[in-house]
Every structure is written in structure tokens, then in C-alpha cells.
Image 1: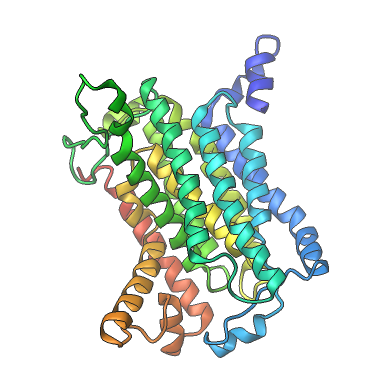
Image 2 (image 1 turned 135 degrees about the horizontal axis):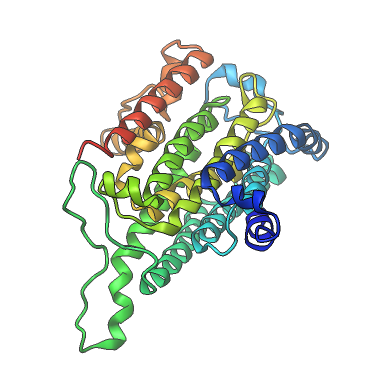
Length: 377
């Protein structure tokens, strides 16, 4: 909004406003704005959540040290969402369709998490929506994102070609080549792309959700992942860098750098209150929203295949749960002492702070490796 007002409308009359055209300037201020919003309204949100008795139920089969966290306010993801979305609207170009698609994804996945958290609070138990209900809500949100991107592809604003790490020349297209003499089957051309988007977004949102089990763990990893995505979105939208790194140049996706900057600032601000010992938990409304946002940005900039590195810890946490469940169902034996993975290390005797710090280090190593793949091609 400020970009539209100060640059597009007032710049001809006051030339210093040309600074608002620079993406780096707006990203920096979006990040700072998000940080200040989170820091300033954080105490108010925590107080209101306590007044409404919106507190976290702690699973009884978890580490016993976590029982003292019972009663800590949850649904802090509302604070994260506000701190991300307001600066994004303020500092980004409102005419950019990719910004609004990402905003929609964040809100839609956050809404599914909100419903889940709300039911948990009302029923005072650790189960909210059923698994089927939660997955259905996520799938609907993901399909809407996929359809919106498919429409933009028709206008040549988006590409369904994948960028494959370490490979320069191979860009597989997720659009199916349907028989041209059967025009009424045209919509089937996008089915592989839609299915892929649904898989990525549901996987990303649930992976962040599974990681959110220790104070500051998920939000710290989010800061690192969002920072890596900010770099990737900037170079993808910059004609010189994209050409040098042999990436698909998509001019309009660069505007998502502002969104990623907002996510970094909001996450740092939330970490102030979520650091051990946490004063507030993000809840599903926060973890699903952040996971949906991370996945959507990766899809738009065609770096979905880098997600296992950009969000490496998230992926390891999700894999640990799948392996644990699969092993128990097939062999009646557990691979880990407890899943997700962070609980396994707690059961080994690591303190919560040590697990968090070491997982953050792992997330940073993964993210740095993801960035090195830009040149290792």
C-alpha cells in the first residue's frame, strides 16, 4: 500500500519517494515493521489469551518435563499472522498476484489450524479436528493455490517447469500434453501440477506442525528457512542474478521477497516470547500457516525440490514420524524412543535447550547448503 501511494502516486511530485521502488529497501522495512508489530502487540495478545483461558493441553505420554508447560497460552499464531500480513500489505506492490496468492495460502492454512486449536481449547483435550477434516481443509486450500497459479500460467506469468538442483538444462514440465483435438479435456493438462502442489503444501504445513513441540524450535527454524527463501526469491526476480545463476527469471516473483522479509521479522518477534521458557505457543494456527507460506513461496519460485534443504529439520521431523508409525504398524517395534525426532533426543537425556540449539544449527546448515546449490549446477 505504501509502495502504491508513495511511489506510484506521489513520486512524480516528490522525487525522494523513488526509494520505495527498491525491493531491498521495502524488504528491510517490512521485516522491521513485522518485528515491531510482534514485539509491541505480543504482551496484549498473551494477556487476552490468558483471559480467555486459551491454554495448551500437554500430552500425557510426552516427556514429563513438559507437564509444567500446561496452561501456557496457545494460538499465538494469530500474532504471527498479523505481524506477517500487515507489513506485506503495507510494503509490497498490491498489483502483484503472487503476493495475494501467498497471503491467501497463509490465511487459509492458518484458518484450518485455528479451527483445530479452537476445538482443542473448547473440549480441553489434545485432539481438535479429526485427521480427515484437517487434511481435507489443507487439500482445499492447496487446490485453490494450484488453480490460481495454473490461471497465471495461461497468461505467461508463471511456469509449471521445475528447477532441478544440480542440473542446468533439465526442466521437467508438470503440465500434461493432452490431445489438442479434444479441447474439453484441456483442464486435465493441469492435473499433475495440481496434485504436485497439493502434495508439497500439505507436506510443508504438516512438517512445520510436527516440529512445533519445543519452545522456540519451529519458529527458529522458520526464521532460517524464510531467510533462505528471501534470497531465492530475490535472485529469481532479478534479471542479472537469475541469468548468472541460470535460474528461471520471473520478474514478478521478486515481490515475494517483501513477504519473506515480513516472515523473518514476525518470526523473530514471536521468538522473543516463545523462547525457552515459552510465554506463548504458536499452536496449529501458526504452524500450519507458516508451513503453507513456506511451501507456497517455494512453489512460486519453482524451488520445491529444494524444500528438503531449505526446511531440512522440518523434513527430518516429518520423516521420523512416518518411520515410527510405519515401523510400529508393520513390525510392532519402534525405531525411535519417541517421535517426532526432537522428543527422541529428549528421551536420550538431552536438555530441551540443547535440542533446540542443535536443531537450529542443523537448520542453518541445511539452508546454507540449499543456497550453495544455486551455483553447484
